Image (tube, rainbow, N blue to C red):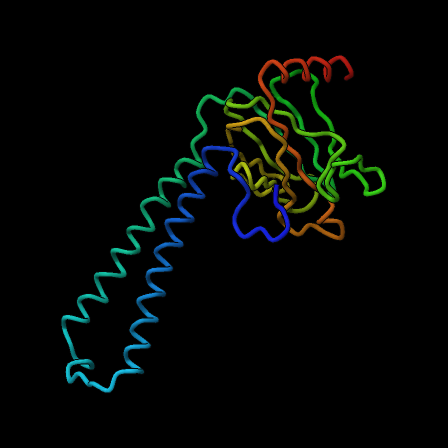
Amino acid sequence: MAHPTQLGFQDAASPVMEELLHFHDHALMIVFLISTLVLYIIVAMVSTKLTNKYILDSQEIEIVWTILPAVILVLIALPSLRILYLMDEINDPHLTIKAMGHQWYWSYEYTDYENLGFDSYMVPTQDLAPGQFRLLETDHRMVVPMESPIRVLVSAEDVLHSWAVPSLGVKMDAVPGRLNQTAFIASRPGVFYGQCSEICGANHSFMPIVVEAVPLEHFENWSSLMLEDA
């Protein structure tokens, strides 16, 4: 959950998000080192009274500034490709959920069950219970078992939407007439908040996403109650 004056990302709640955080720190360190080097060169060039007659024509410098950027790009590309493959890998999901975007709410269908689905609307500010978050709470949460591979099929009924939950490291566009898929594993129990991340009309900022990860036995009890009420 994000909080005021926060400078970093939300706490990771999935293996993919943990990898993304490590990659962010890796790339940020490279940027910091490059910026420090460039700043040092600028200060040295401006402040020194010495001159170098080879500064405008030096094969050694040309070799360095040709090879060094290539090495830096490789150091950035290799971990990035690893994470891209990790994000696309969907092997033997234990549960499949279809998330459908509407103006302006989400609907969820648990395709492994015969009749388990519901609409998820934002809770109005005046109806919030103590401790609930404004513009983020929904009347029905998407409940999933923790430590289980979850596949999410994402589409839209009307216009473009985007299903995104930062703590889980997932973001997938919802396109009308197209079924996209993403996957995640909730590594710990908790409630994780997201929002539609594609401008979709007047109430775009009022269609939050709430994913609740619970132990498997709690999920089975929840699904049984939902099926009884259906």
